[in-house]
Amino acid sequence: MTLSRRQVLAGLCSSPLTTSIGTGAPPRMLEARPAVIEANGAPVHLMTYDGLFPGPVLRWREGERFGLQLVNRLPEPTNLHFHGLHVPPDGNADNVFVTVEPGQHFEHALTVPEGHGGLYWYHPHPHDRHLLAAQLWAGLSGAIVIESPLDH
Image (cartoon, rainbow, N blue to C red; front, side, top):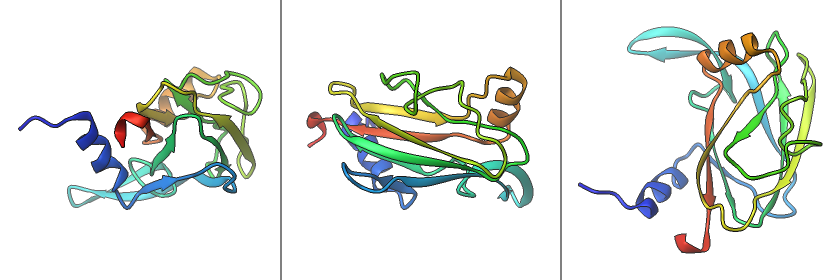
């Protein structure tokens, strides 16, 4: 069976783990925290977003401005990167040089550019490459669905 892009995105967007944030909505909180997830009947200790693996699907539309507050409940510094999105790599948009210490938070604000509908992902991107690899392997990641006018 062949699935179209529209069918794949529709399936992701209908997930109960999907979060949609519209223009003018208050920033959505995304909590990086340890969690125990059951895998094949055994407990696995992971770093998660909102206690989920993978993290919740974030869903926005091209041209839409959104806010996302990362809250760090991990025992080490982290941050957030919107992988593949064509957004500014500085300030409070997609700045991988921001460090969010344990117990702290950081509010991201950016606009999804027109013409970039598709499937992307978010993950930590601390400047320390050892933290980056460890946090990715520990489970910190999630999907971003950007709707385009072609999806309607």
